Amino acid sequence: MSDMTFLDWPFFEPRHRALHAEADAWCAANLPVDHSDVDAACKGLVASMGAAGLLQHSGAAEGEKLDVRSLCILREVLARHDPLADFSFAMQGLGMGAVSLFGTPLQREWLTRTRSGKAISAFALTEPGSGSDVANTATLAEAVAGGYRLNGEKTYISNGGIADVYVIIARTGEAAGARGLSAFLMPADVAGLSVVDRIDVIAPHPLAHLRLQDVFLPETARIGAGGAGFKLAMSVLDVFRSTVGAAALGMARRALDEALARTTSRRIQGEALASLQMVQGHLADMALKVDAAALLVYRAAWTKDMGAARVSREAAMAKLYATEAAQEVIDAAVQLHGGDGVRHGFRVEALYREIRALRIYEGASDVQRVVIARSILA
Image (cartoon, rainbow, N blue to C red; front, side, top):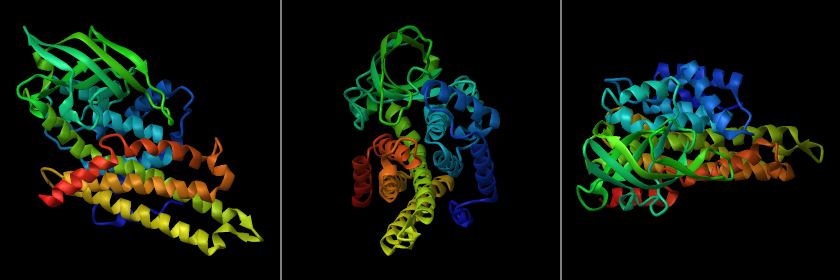
């Protein structure tokens, strides 16, 4: 039932339309999966998407660039069918984004494994005392003979506890604040890394609080130059932030589909619920928000793919609007379902829980407003 006419927009090439059809067919045959054991579900999803070749799009081969439109298309399609599948795909990309953009040939061996679904990746940025304020990172990477010794804690780490490899941001001290951070590639089996706690949230995902105690990493584990960690992390988010908007867009499309199915089949006073003008008004608003979000998401992705060095403003607009609009679309779908909208087992109830985190992670909505305001004031 979803409106696919957006694929005719000039943002896309024939290969993007083909990818959408391929992904949609795979999702229809394989999703949703059982969420009762979230760790097992995510491991199975990574292996399955790897075998199907979908994860090849989560990173770039040597000498190639990430295609952000492909990332967005895949996240939108996956999220429409099963948001946990979107999560698993997204983390393969975000987790290894720094390696994809800046990694050495040795480090890219891990990327080969994550793109084939043979390893699970994670991006360890957030700390108990620093979320949006990355410059306040406290995890310390002290230079020692042959490499670095890391001590600190990371929290709300997606894939924490099931990842095979982490990209971690730590303070190396070249300068104060953001200019004194570096990025490192850290295998999960390294001595001194432990899972302090697994974190339960309203829409279950594998999340963990990690502790690093005298973790030794060789010099070859550092990604990029010393002190370039903040710039590297922002470059990764510059690519993947608009894809969060794409995931929200996929959830919003599914909510609109569910609302259309409900209001055209549910009868009131002998007529379909959709015959009521007020209901039609809700549906019109939902469709408007979906299309507006899609335009912002794919503008940002197209701009990046066309060679823009940074798309901070466009990506912030895409993420902010798409996630906020999706929350409103899903809320309207819940309302149109009546009591069933808050009943376990109905798709809109699950979407209501699943959408909320997207307005927080990879830069909360208020952070995106700051990014946008600073760009226009500059």
